[in-house]
Image 1 (cartoon, one colour):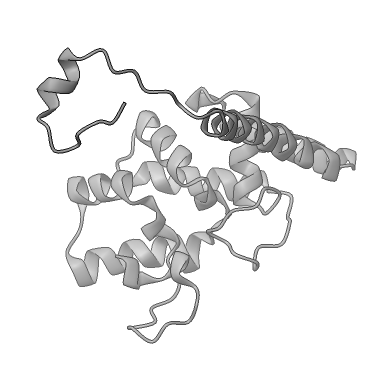
Image 2: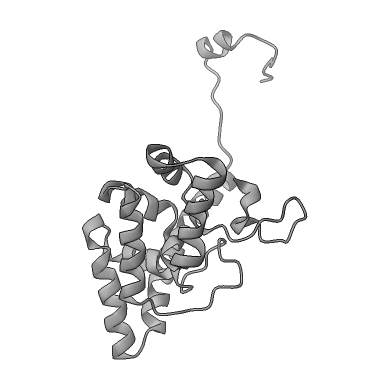
Length: 193
């Protein structure tokens, strides 16, 4: 049977034409679901395999505990910390992020600073889901400096700053401005703003 593609859509709705989805399409969809599940499992396992000393494990646990007010599962906490500190690959860092066990003071300092920007716990939960790498950014050289740039150069403060951070939290980690002369660090460049 040949279908006239120029006919109005209403004719197709009234006809008894059935379309068959090729098995290669359904197999590809199934395979992509399997690989996504594998990634989740191996990314969390990757963290647990690398942290071997008791001291590092207790530091990791303390940092995970600091994320508990945001109602993340243990797997989500591991993923957030893993992406922030180089245990789970993140395109944001590229190749530059070395694996580092997070320090509780660093994580708490960043969370406190973000709260000081009028972000509620619900806001922080959303921000951490969108941009977990924020916990691995330098508080003084990146976060505070970037907020100052937003306030000084763009006059973005208060509620407007809060809305911007929820929409585009990566702005907190920008650390380069290529000014159009690409430095191949686009994920961290102000040109994206």
